[in-house]
Amino acid sequence: MSEAAPVGTVLEVDLPPVPVDPEYAEFGGRQMAAKYKLRQSGARPPIFEYARLLWARRHFIITYATSTNRAMYSGAKLGQVWQLLTPILNVAVYFFVFGFLLNTSRGVPDFILFLVVGIFLFNFLQTAVVFGSRSISDNLVLIRALHFPRASLPLAATVIQLQQLAFSMVIVFIVAVSTNQEPSWKWLLIIPVLVLQTVFNAGCAMLVARMGSVLTDTSQLLPFIMRTWLYVSGVMYSIYSVTSAHHLPRIMLWILEYNPPAVFISVVRNCLMTVPPPSAAQAAAVAEAAKANPKPTAAEIVTNGQNLYHSYVGSLAQPHHAWAAIIIWAAVVGFGGFAYFWKAEEQYGRG
Image (cartoon, rainbow, N blue to C red; front, side, top):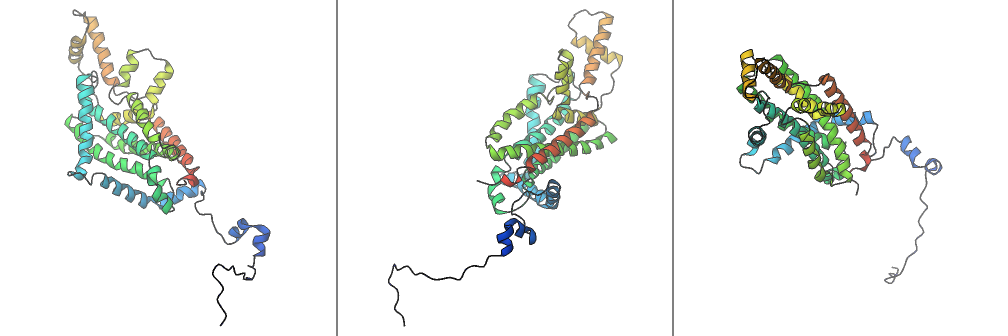
């Protein structure tokens, strides 16, 4: 038996040389990967292949969104009831401030219905954008543990808000019936409008998700941006009342009318609400109550009545080619946000 080597002795062992594949030595690793059909882990696929992968993960997106939605209220005693209470309380607050204190309902028919449509549709956009901005930064553990299309996360954030909008639309239809709006075939047109807005919101969510993955302060800045967007979108007031009372430049009129949230909201309002023309006696009574001149002439009463009636109907006016506008907004922002997010697919989750 040979004696053991002293501790600390360095042994030199002659190992046989490792054989090197001549193809690898000659052509390199990329050619070998191509030969054996190997792909780089986490590499960005072509955009249409990426879309196909997302469609294949549609069940994961819906399930993830549904479970997250349920978990939001799991700690509350009322649980999922808050999905109905939250929009009701929001409407109550906005109606008290803008309808009662500030009296912005002047000239707007069925102001409570006018208000709930604006609040719910804008809230759908706002929450999808805010939650989408955090969808990457809040899920780094999941991103680093599993390989899946990262766009699934901002899309899931949009689906969560779409599910909550479904509860809000129940409130909208209840308010519509309670304010004597008669159901008609136009109500069915709300479905394609919401589909187009979902595409628009998803594009916005993916756009800010990429920004938020690099600059985490994005989610802190967005509430201020969204609040400004809220106040210029005709959510709590009639854009017609602003444009008709002030001589604004043509470009400002175009921006106000074709602002994406404003045009989506105006189309839904027109699908849901109808304004019956008032009689001559009603127009004269409205003019009499709102006149500035204590002793108007008959001609002034007729003129004021016509102006107020046009303001009454104008509160539901939508811009020309509104349907074309929402289709264009959905296509441009939806595909643009998707392409912008896809370009950085390899960067998400890296430290």
